[in-house]
Length: 195
Image 1 (cartoon, rainbow, N blue to C red):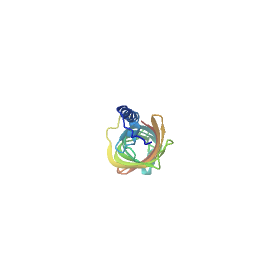
Image 2 (spheres, rainbow, N blue to C red):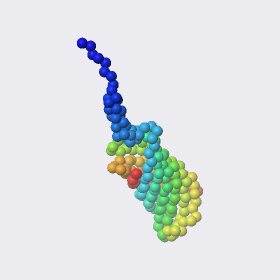
Image 3 (cartoon, rainbow, N blue to C red):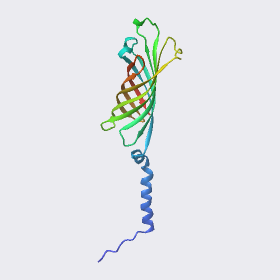
C-alpha cells in the first residue's frame, strides 16, 4: 500500500495563514524592541549633593544639584546619548566674609553612556561622560543672577540603574570640570528617575 501525496486545501492554507498572522500581531512590540534599527527615548530627572573640589572648595561649601535630560538609545547596543540641563547652587564659605552669597552653575551638556557588563533585571553599571557649556556667577539674592560667565567644560563618572515597573531609578557620581579663569570643578552625587 503506497501513501498518497497530500494536497493543501484552501482551508488548510487559510488556517496556516491565520496562525502566522496571529503570531505577527501578538508579538510585534517585543520583536520591534529587539530590532537593531529601533530607537527608544527617555526623560530623566535627578537631584542630589554637589561637592566642590579643587580651588572652588576654598571659597564655597557643598550645595545641591538638579538636572533634567532627554535620552536616546539604539536597541541592542551598549551606547546611549542624552542632552542634559543642570543647575547647581553652593553657598559661600563663612571665611570669605560674603554672608548669604551663593555660587551658581548652569550647565548644558551632551553626554554619552556606556553599559558595563550585561544588562539584567537587577540593573547594571554604566560609564558616563560628555562635554558642554557652563555658566557661573555669584549672587546675594535669588533673582540676581543676570551676569554669567560661560565656559567650556566636561564631566565624567559612573552610574547604576535599577529597572522598576515603568521606570528606572539611577544613582550617579560625576566629576565636572569648567575651564573658567580660574578653573572650577565639583562632584555631583545624584539620585533620579528615568521614564
